[in-house]
Length: 103
Image (cartoon, rainbow, N blue to C red):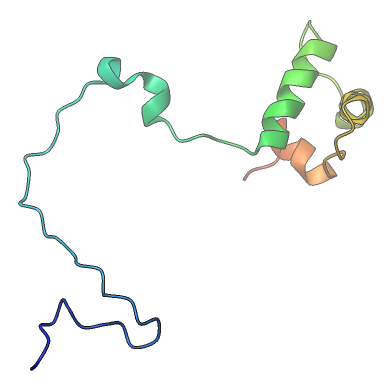
């Protein structure tokens, strides 16, 4: 007796093949930004280290870090990473986080 296509076992694993179900085409969803929230539609930009660098820089320099030299920011923010026992990010990560280098 011949087995049906879906009942045949996968050759290597011996398990049944997964069935793919084709769903009918649905009308496109019309969801506004308000319903989803703006954060759901935006892609997260930057790594965790980059977000952490910006947060620490804003706390270390309350009047603004934009005019401060990168090496000064690296020294002060690097101390915060050391206190948390996290590895200090590389120079390139600082530049990208501070928007001083293109991605």
